[in-house]
Image (cartoon, rainbow, N blue to C red; front, side, top):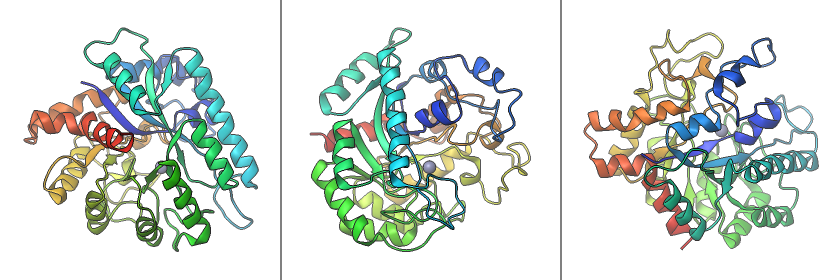
Length: 355
Ligand SMILES: [Zn+2]
């Protein structure tokens, strides 16, 4: 079955973790055995061969670079221009992967339909994986002219915030609204028909952004606060508001967002008893609030600065997503709904956006 993953930091892995996603997963892990700079070294779960093995023929892939003002304890660049340059380097890697035939940028309706035709049935090995370019955190957009340039480069979705305070909106663990710059950004996004990614917006910024943005909204990788109490997850009111706007919400597989009480570098998937099946609880919660299965999808965030030390215990690689349809069926989901969650809902959203 075709899988659509609405959130993968592919280029960040290539350029900041030095991972060559064209290689088999064992080789990527092997080359990191001696490294200790990041907790997920040697524990990656994503590469192109594993994506293809699961039928993952379409994803949303990010550019990401934070700008930090003095006093901000988070890691990031010291100027917006440096952050911009970082995202341009990430784009250069996506282009290099397009040149190799590994990836194919999808930026309009015709491209989407073409990619779906190629991936329906049994695509030959090495079929390019389609990617929709998204920006996670907008700090790298130096001026609105840069947003227009990004659109010309294929940018089709944007999450104004990431962790902490941002230039255009406040993110996870921060508070406050979007300010004039945020409002101007949203106006320009609407003009360019760029999708607003509500993931990572703090509560204040979330409500203000929804109020000011009449365009298309999705949430690429967000779970439910009712199951895991933390501001990173959406409250039921937020989920209902997103459903009203026609959004699709992608379910992430970052362990701390799946089960309550996770302590980074202490809790293990085994000690938490965390299995992939838990993903269905979050999906099901959204479907119950919606009264249907049309607003839920996958946005795994796998290898988004965490690896197997912080994913479900029974997940080896991203190819394990191929087990999700059966889990949904066991919970009573009909085939039409299973298809929707695995790919159809995000595809419907994109068709409506690009009509
Ligand atoms: Zn994220």
